[in-house]
Image 1 (cartoon, rainbow, N blue to C red):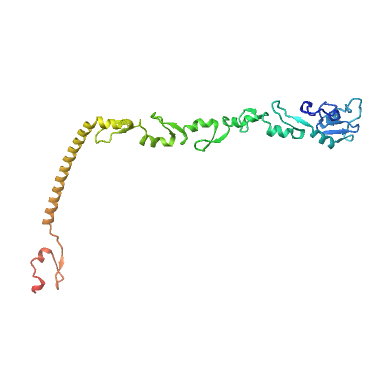
Image 2 (cartoon, rainbow, N blue to C red):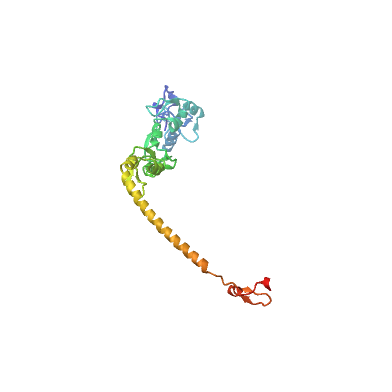
Amino acid sequence: MGYDQTWFVDPLDPDLKCPHCRKVTQDPYRGKCGHILCFDCVQELMLRKIPCPALGCLTPLDLTSVAYDRAAFGTIQKLRVKCASLECKWLGYLEGREEHLAKDCEYQITPCSWGCDAKLHRKYLLAHRNVCPKCIMPCPYCSQVATADEYPRHYEVCPKYVVSCPKGCGASLKRFEVPDHLQRHCGRAEVQCPVVNCTEYVTRDSFSAHMTQRAVHHVELLNAALTVDRTLVQQLLGRVQSLEAQVAFFSASYVPNISIATPNSGQETTCEEKRDMPSLGNI
């Protein structure tokens, strides 16, 4: 079947129209009678054994009476046409129309490039990418890839996603920074009083006020702790002195039982026996 006449910008040569489908000839074949017809129309006419349908022409059509008309094809392909979309202002040659529709026309209805069921104008594809549930894109925070429908779940665990302080101090920070923020900086995070035996927890913002208001109580706690420490020290000192006395007693009363061989006899004598032997200097 031929090309729709509404595509063309300039007036058409009647000789370029197919006498069977009444459209601009597509893949033109010329019969012996001189008329050109679309290839599909020629096949249909030959199958039905209908002669050339041009007005007043009854020339039979068969494989020997028609031939491909390359010159007519070139002429038709150079005819100026407009885009199929009414909103598009493109004008060009017929030979470039299909490529324009397939690649360039912003108003051509196009299926989603990423596999969802959406169909929309090509110019909206880039914006659609941000909401397409099938489009795989890197996370804008941590660069991990995910589809748009996975982003809500990913954002719940993304370490670099910006969140508000869970204590409500107003700080905005990356999720992985939250533990350090709570431990060192957050004014609403609770910290334990560092005074010995003080079990109170206060917010970091109220820490100074707590130390001032509870100063007397803290002194009492420190005195009590110091009293306990002094008692413990005295007990430890008494234990040490007791151990030192035991060590001194055993050191004074202990005599090692060491065997010594006497000269010329080959006999061994204990330390107690050695005390009664004459010294070698007196022999």
